[in-house]
Length: 193
Image 1: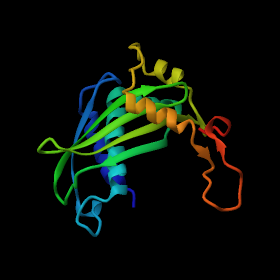
Image 2: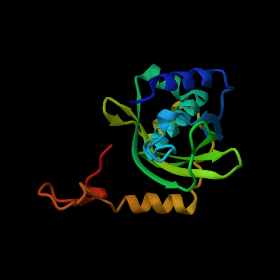
Image 3: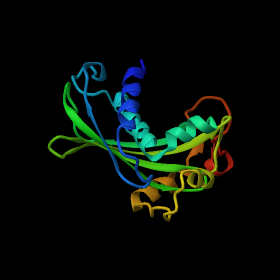
Image 4: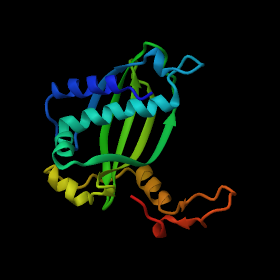
């Protein structure tokens, strides 16, 4: 089940934090709970993605995006994810989530996040392709950047981030998994928000 109460707490806690420039790093503190864990007594990889969401929502509050979402009836969506797991997070362990905007293009904002253990080790790292949506359609990034009053230049993506963005442009959609159905097409001809 989605942790709605934890989300509400995280949003409430973020309101007490100072506002931030959208291009700054947001750091949030968390603790692994038993409900986050799988049969191997570590945080479940699916739950890790959910906990990353808590960090993104807190950052959204601090940068003013959350207020814009409510005011303009916008929503948020994730259109792609690349994650690397390296260290276990165990029950009751404290960790911090670091969140920053890696870059953006005409359609998407790319967000990088990391979970760091108390000893400074990075447990996992994720890159997300995200969008703001209005009535089921992606809001052009230029409109979002203007609404957030971002005047700084677009961050130059790290080489691995740009490589992932470029590789995703060649990905077939729908995927060819051996079933009868629509013929896969390169992403350029089968674009979806």
